[in-house]
Each structure stands twice: as C-alpha cells, then as structure tokens.
Image (cartoon, rainbow, N blue to C red; front, side):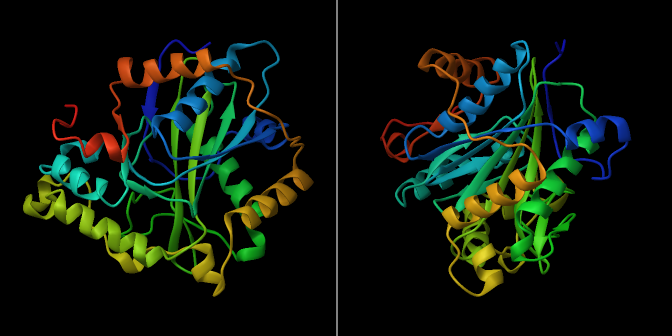
Amino acid sequence: MCIMEKDTSLTGGYLGRGFTVYSELLHSPFTWIDSGIYRQSPVEPIALDEALATAMKEPNAKPIIHLWIYDKAFWLGRRDAKLPHLEQALKAYSYEGYSALLRSSGGACVPLDSGVLNMAILFPQCNLAIDDFYKLAADILSVGLADYGKIELGEVVDSYCVGDYDFALSGKKIGGMAQRRTRYGSILQLCINIEGSGIERGALMEDFYHQAGLYEMEVAQRPVPAVRKETIGSISEHMGRAISVDEVKEQLYSAISNKWTAPKGELPLTEADKEVAIQHLTGRLGLFSYTAAEIQQSDWRLQK
C-alpha cells in the first residue's frame, strides 16, 4: 500500500528507466471495461476511475483499461483555476451545453465531447516509475492506433493542455496523458480526439481562454500558455474521412488484445463505491463538478 497520495503532472521523458519493471508492465493482463457515455455530473466517470483504483487494494487485483466518454465539458486542470474570469467563461459556455470539472490529474483544460475517447489505464502498484507508466501507454497507443498512422510522442507547442506526453499524427495533437497516484494504485488517463474537427476544438479553447482572461495577464504570470487552433487535430481529420469512436474502440481492442491479454469485463463497483469516490474527490481533494444546468442558475458561483 502507498503511504502518500499525490497528483503527478506531465514531466520527464517517456523512455522507461527500469527494464525489469517495464517488462512486467508490458506482459500484464488487463480487464477491458467500457462504461459508455455520460451527460450528467462530470465527476461521475473519473469517480469510477478513482473507485477502480481503490479496488486495487483487493488481493490478486488485476490491471484495468477503462474507456468512457463525457458529452460535453471543460475538463480543467488546477492551473486553470487561477484564471481571473474563469467563472464568467464557464457561465457563458454553459449556455452552449458545457459542464465543468476540476480534475485531479495533471495538466490544463481539455474540451470533452462525444467525439473524444477517454481511456484510463489502472495498475495495483502505486510505486511505478513515471517514465515506465508513460512508456507503456505509448506502446498501447502505437499498437492500438497503428492503422491510422505513426503516433508521434512529445510536446506539441501551442496546443491546449500542452505537455511532454502529448501524442500527435502528422504534427497535430490528437491527445495527451495525465498521471495520478492514489493510496492503492496508479491511474494514467488519456484523451483521444477521434471524431470531428481538431481545429474547431482548438478554436474553442482559444476563445475560452480569451473569455477566462488569460491574455489580460502578464505573460510571466499566465498559469497556462496561449493556444493556437492550428496545432490540434483528430483521427478523422488526419484520415480525411469520418472515423467513429466505435470504430476506434474496436480497433484498439483488436490490436491490444492481440498483443496483451485483455478480456472484456463489467464495472466491479457498487453505487456506494462510486459515492465514496465522489466524496473523496470533491471533499478531500477539493475538486469541483458542475453540470451546464447548474452553472446556468442565477445564484451559481464557482467554488474557490
């Protein structure tokens, strides 16, 4: 069991430092869980990840790959909470149907919609080397998305939620990774832009940061860098044809299950497990979670 709980942001390279540990990860069997699409409380799917990580304390716990979609929300990082007009920006975008979540893993804001696939990789070990965990994810992506082109790993300058663990096709960012350690296990969360326009998502984030007051701040004081819409892509844009989330899920599963053991399973959680995780995230860790309808209420104020 881990003694400490911490959030780990995107730092360091993606080459594994310990061959023995990485080799063990590479040959681990996974349980493949797809919990579907969410449109209510945006904390719900990450609470499931949290509850799954807590369940890693059980004897003989196995690694899990959990897939989910949230339609639609701003998935904010802690740095975004420092923006001077964040409340006003969230209020404005709530009328376009955007919910808001302050998440527990590292990074900055990511826009979620029905064309973005979220994938969490969970392990019972909580002392994994950061680089080993990221390299495993890089291998999973390279294998799982091989039919769509060569995945490029590394920072995509001027993209949203920019970091060393961005991944791209033809230089356009299609996703990123953020890592979190809990008391009983490790979670690596990935977002993959599949359907729709990456440039439109980039333009959305350009405008969001304008409304949130990023560009009113002195450059040295900005909590996140500026975004250029041209840096963002999607698998559909890269392929020049409509690619569905379901198609990519099937491709990921087929490719991953051919290289790793990955039987499909159901969520091994109760409603009580989920509620405990929600209370932990919103209470102890101080995360906020609002639906668009909640933000639209006249007395709504952003939790500080």
